[in-house]
Length: 304
Image (cartoon, rainbow, N blue to C red; front, side):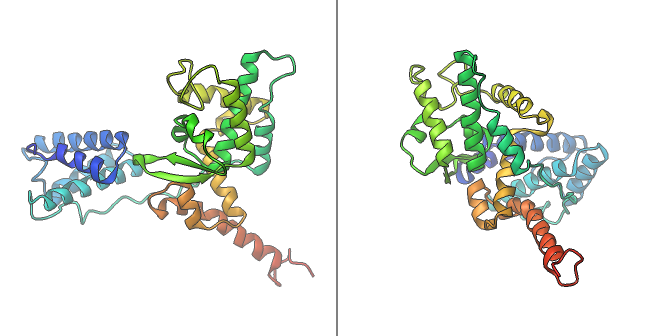
């Protein structure tokens, strides 16, 4: 094990918890930053005290880092020092009693059901369009149908192999964050669009449902964003309001508004913790308020 135990800690996260590469990189940056700050005081990372960690986190707030970034760094520190305790490197976890910053409840942006209908209806090429534009609109329709029907992350969508669509019926096996797999439903409209796209791309010999300019690689996020931008304009929507994540939020919001269970939504979205899914409970609150306004006998909107 290295002197500070950081390499072993990150290896544990990757092996035992399936932590994503970006998470590992972020945690290494966080620990390197703390190590640099401690070195100024002549202290080392493994032997830091609760007072030193508290001062470090206060410095982050004074430097203007967001509450969410501060909370992520505290989470990293708690896990790192707990790892050192379990490895017998120190007797206590100095980060365990530090308070996390209060996070504001930022509600996700989402489209109305009418906006989604307009977006899907716009994925049609002009009658005089060439083969490139016809395929581009088919890519848009297939991607949007799958995103809205299944709630995938954009990384999950673009990495979909053709084989996953070729052998599926009503469900799709998706590999999500940390390599965790889950089954999500695939609508008949999404299935039909994918079949049409695969027939059109049969000569590309790509393993991906959405190949990039180089068929050996998947389409890039930037490439998909350009297609989404153009479809939004055709649908009369502001492209600045639209992103793959907004479609994921729309999927979740519309499911809940039609009565879906929060636990089922957690599974469909691939959230490891239901607290992540609970941000969508604003929809349930709105439904309750609407029911109260229209059905409570003392409400001015209730039927006489």
